[in-house]
Length: 325
Image 1: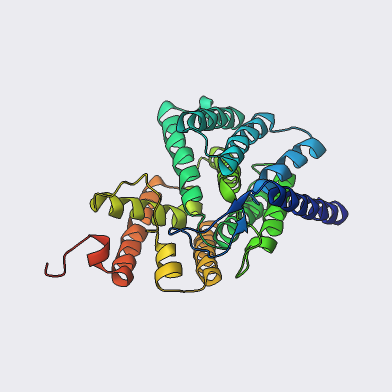
Image 2: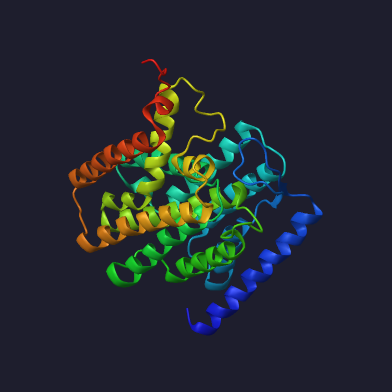
């Protein structure tokens, strides 16, 4: 993408986002703070609609090279936006998600893989979509973490191995820059909403699956390691405490720092992005390929992460221990 098209695209995306703000204000698409919120003022919800709009724009301009992915993105973005405006039923939401994932799998030729790989991919996609959605809880976290991830994809695609159309990566990065301009603030102008976090997860997983299938290297799953560790350990601790893991909560590690320790949201968001960025750098620098390396990396970092959580949050809270135990 040359500089003039890049700048024009950036300006168009800014204009689209500002137009959405007007629409959201008129139709009262806002996020009111409650007892689970990490914010204290009413904020526009659904600013992340720019992610799917940007990719659809890319398809229209550069040709619908990934038409099944784009249709899937449109489906999952639509039901997520509906859910932002007025909660949709679980059955309808699940059906839309499954249809979108089926189209995604067709686009990346997942159905040509062995059955165990398809099953693994299904767990990865569904789990990651929910994890990224759950992790969208404080200013800047979704934007900074995803920007690091997409920039890593861009670097790999340009300097390591070509696995996707570079224009799609570029426009995705531009949409995140626009979103971060309004969200990466002490008082955010907008939140991503389900339409943002879910569609962004879908976009990231599209690139990730393309990369893994092209290279046959599962170690690239480590590009989602930090989010994965926070999500999986949180679910594990909540299940141990016999809590309903499907009920909304404030038990994530990032929420502990932002809400209980009162660490500024942007510092927490930057920390998550930087840690994942270091992991991505190591991954590219040493380029491990064995599944054993992936298993050991996840196991070791999981143990370290759990010990860190116990050290700062306390075993009493995490394991629901009584004071006299």
